[in-house]
Length: 424
Ligand code: NAD
Image (cartoon, rainbow, N blue to C red; front, side):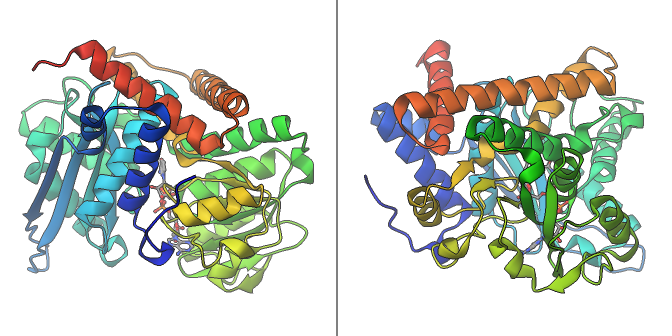
C-alpha cells in the first residue's frame, strides 16, 4: 500500500482531496488523460469586491468561485465565509463536491465558493451588503446550468435569500427563471427540511452503520465537534434516536456531561449566548479535548484537517461520522483504519444537504411544493440505499468505506466523460 507523503500538519483540504482522487484512479486503473480531467478544475475564479458599508467604511474582500467538474450537471456546492478561506481550500472542497454529488446520485457536478471575511465581525446589514456585492461580482458564474451555490461555514439561509433577490431584482423580475441558489428561506422558494438535511443525514448514516455493526443506538455515547448547522442538528437527531450526547464543542469552548447533555436545552442556550461554554447542564472543557472524549461515535462537524497524525492515536471513538468536509488528514485516516475504527466518509456522511438541495432545485424548476414528510422520506431512503451500496462494495472488495465510496463516485464521473464523448 502506498503511503501519504505530506506531513499531517501541512495537509490541506486540497492535498487530501487530490490524494483521495489519485488513489481512486490508481485502484480503478484509469489512464493518465482521464486522471487529468478528474483532478484539474474546469474553472477557478479569483476576484475582489468592494462593498461600501453604511458607516462609510469600504471593505476589500477576496472572493473565489471554483467549478471543479460539471460532467454530470451544473456545479453544486456551498459558499464558505471565513477570514482564512483560500483558492486552494475552495478548489479542494469543489473537488469533494464532484464526488459527493456523483455518489449520492444527483445530476450535479462539483463547485464551491469562498468569501474571505470574518462573518462574526459584520452586523446583519453589513453582511447583506457583502452578499449582494459578492453576487454582483460573480454573477456570470452563477446560474441553474452553471453553478448553484448553497450555505456552508459562515453563510446561512438568509444569505441565500439575498443572493436570490439580488439576481431577480437585477433582472426586474419577482422570481428567477429556475433555481440559482439552494438553501433559501422557504418563503422565497426554499424547501422545508433543507437546513436540517445535512445533520439528519449524518444521523441516518450512523444508524445504518449501527445496524451493520450490531450496535444499539441507545448504547452509544456521542461527541460532536462544532455546534453550527450540521453539528447541532446531528446532535439533536442522535439524541432523538436515543443516543447519549456526552460532549460538544464550538470555536470558543466545549461542554461535557457523562450522563448525556440535554441537547434541546443546549441549542436554546447557544441561541441566547452564542456559544456552548458556560452551559449549566454540562461541565466546561477545553475545546480540543472534545475530539478525544471517551465515546463510541465522534462526529467532527466543524473545520477540515482537525484529526491529524498527531492526535489520531488519542481518538477513542469506534465510529467516526464525518459531518465536516475532510476532517481527517490521509495519515490520520490510515492510523485510524489500522486501529479498526469504522469511518463513514464525508462524501457519504454529509451528502444529505446536497441531496435535499437537489429536491429544492427540482421543486423550483417545476414550481412544485414538497411536504416535510416527503423530503424526510426521500432523504432517509437515499442515505440508506447509498450507505448500503458503499458498505456492500467495501465488504466485497475488502476495502475501507472511504475507498468504496470514492471508487463508486469516480467511476460514475468517468462513465459520464465517456458517455459525453472525447471531442469538444
Ligand atoms: P456553521 O458555520 O454553521 O458551524 C460551524 C461550527 O463549528 C460552529 O459551531 C463553530 O463555532 C464551530 N467551530 C469552528 N472551528 C472549530 C474548532 N476548531 N473546534 C470546534 N468547533 C469549531 O457550519 P456548518 O454549515 O455546520 O458546516 C460545518 C462543516 O460541515 C463544514 O466542514 C462544512 O463544509 C460541512 N458541511 C456543511 C453542510 C451544510 O449543509 N451546512 C453540508 C455538507 C458539509
